[in-house]
Length: 311
Ligand code: SF4
Image (tube, rainbow, N blue to C red; front, side, top):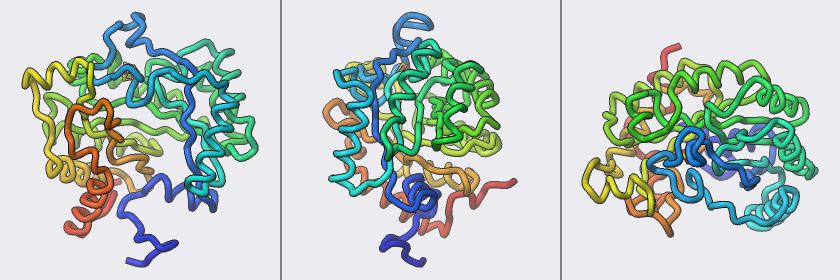
């Protein structure tokens, strides 16, 4: 395989490479905290939250940022410029549900996140039941000037599992959100978790097949990991489910990639595990090793993203 910029190209449509190709420079996401909450934690849907959710609201730090959005952007830009020589940036609202507020407040927050001249995009992580047409129209209004994504936490298409993990929304809610968001100039990313309790490999691959047919633009794949002080930790310590081994995960991720259309961007192939609160699996701490093993497995199979996708 030919090298590109000194790197062997991936056998999947890596989001970072997609950004580099699209904008002709290094583009990094700046993670911002606007102090949003989540209806699955504050009592509107439930007060328990998803069984894997830690204090920070889905794999991020708890609200601990006293800086304004503009200050967070400026700090992020400086840090990423000096650390990675990044040139352009996407303002990324990750933790909790970042459309869970009245539309006027959302507008003020998103406007502020886009003030910096080097910010070329906006990415908003949220639940599929936290959008409506008014909010989608607001987000769509940024697409003339910026590169815009909405990232929906889906996790799985199986309602039985969604109930089991206390997700508080259904697959149909996700489909409704995707329909609202489509054809509005907004890119759509779905977050999925591989290894959820009670799911077989067949169940997981059914999620891949369903996403493949939806015409979405990106997928972020997480490995189920057990974090401290979560319901999942109690279930894990009570032996109520088994985590996947690294070999099983690598195999399943490759199967998953093979079923997705080649043009879908892959935003991640495993979470970061947040070492300080990670209970298991330990092998997630060696993320580079894991990503290399996925590359090697695709090589071994002479396979690639979309190799089993049928249009
Ligand atoms: S939707 Fe996200 S923030 Fe809300 S409870 Fe679930 S993981 Fe936590």
